[in-house]
Length: 162
Image 1: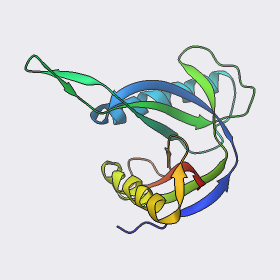
Image 2 (image 1 turned 90 degrees about the horizontal axis):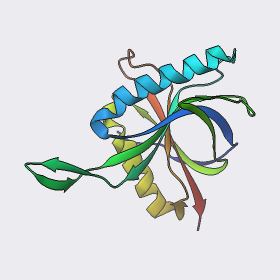
Image 3 (image 1 turned 180 degrees about the horizontal axis):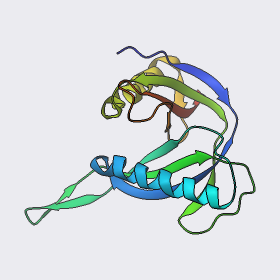
């Protein structure tokens, strides 16, 4: 699949999220629980959801035990939730963050969530050829639910022009 990648200016976005660390195999289950918790917290505060669900990913080091040996494993620090108004006071596992504004590389993946890594690879290649460099952790915005045969996922990656 070819990806149309653009550098765009985005506004900072306040969001209610649940944070955690998980492996790639655990991401789907984590997102389901996180989205449910955030929706519950927003409902308790009588705050309407005003935007699509998203998840921001940052790779962290980790290790797993295999046959008694430590082996490196890719873990992600994940923040998953929904846009929300500023100054929202939440408690418990749901908290607020602000996604950064400024320049970002943006593309849309159409297809299985399991194949979205191709969009990240395309943006990484675009960084090499465009003169931009990443400045923060990327996030995915889920434009369609998992019941859609070819869901759309927008990948947003903060960057700057060198």
